Image (cartoon, rainbow, N blue to C red; front, side, top):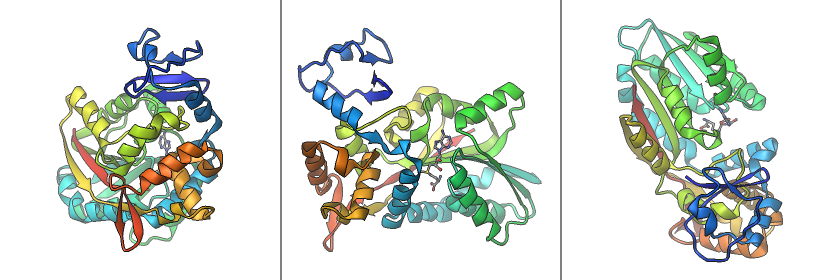
Length: 341
Ligand SMILES: C[S@@+](CC[C@H](N)C(=O)[O-])C[C@H]1O[C@@H](n2cnc3c(N)ncnc32)[C@H](O)[C@@H]1O
């Protein structure tokens, strides 16, 4: 992949569309300063300046959490994951704990634990009597607090020991390598979090190396067929990407897995998000959903008008959304990728 760095911004390069070249020397390709893309990239000075004026949603954590919660309320994101957990997970975990009295589960970016507890219920059901150690890597103190509250009010978790690590996956990796401890796991999952790591191939490689024989690594993220993948491909270069968030889909992950020679199976999880409010000017929920879609803080107020109009018009199109009973349902399909040890 090729990126442009501009100040703190890291812009993903698309194929050149015009010869209108911006040759400011502050632009460097992080791959190679003599990269051929850099001589003919498609961004004008105006594009780059507006990408700088807009701020990444990740730079304001509570704004991010507010728009993420609204996204969950307006989408079938968690429902489609629950369906997958109900239907497919029991088979997937059938090899992870045979004959073991302790099963170690590692949740990377576990958020507030809603999905994690459903996964644990399936592990409990599959291995009655086993003790489960569930460790959670989660950098947000707010999310950990919600997770702990959820655990406190959930019954039937007696045989599960929870440990929270308030850190990023990279910090965990550094800590493990420094301690030379390298605890191994029977099941590791990374659900909707790989967008936020700096080096995805290295992260997958590290966590894969922590799998016990027969263990599985589950990755869930947006599908290559989703509206997200199309939106990011077309508009990613015009949005305030920075080091905090990468626009990746299951198609990118599958490429990484092929290159690494890892064996995996992938499942498509159909899902949608009701974005009808995005089309009512000034609607607060619509504005927050647009922030989530573009990963931009206050997108409606900070984006150049032509970019905003173009995105809003595109979102209504069938490549992105289906119109049903007067509502616009954005394609939020996910992929679940299960990697063998
Ligand atoms: C979109 S949420 C998904 C939460 C949960 N897995 C779910 O599906 O509901 C992403 C989570 O990853 C966490 N996160 C962000 N960067 C991370 C990193 N570098 N390492 C581990 N977790 C990270 C965030 O704090 C957030 O809780």
